[in-house]
Image (cartoon, rainbow, N blue to C red):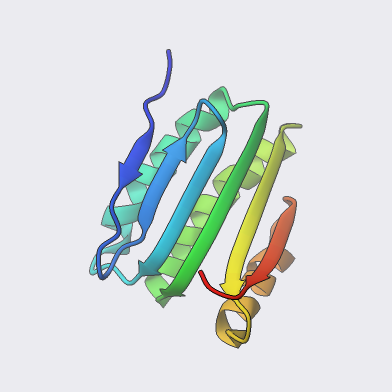
Length: 129
């Protein structure tokens, strides 16, 4: 059964979400400071769990956060672990962490995630997100 794409618009507190399982392209962009991070991320975690049963040939997750809070950090880590599981099942998975040049806190966050995950993880510094 074909999985539907997910498109969620960015708000002042939640990131935009674009999940295209057919092409293996996943993106989170914006701020992640929801009132209820579990409420926001749980459906995404369940979706990626389901996707992991029949992933595309190659999966790329692009993460372009301006800012995220501590409760989001735990959910983002849980999301990354879902992609890590797909990677450990001998699938091509790449996480791309984008941050603006000079944004040390987002650069450090990317480095921290990269250090604790066993999945190809690129940190890409850009002039503007």
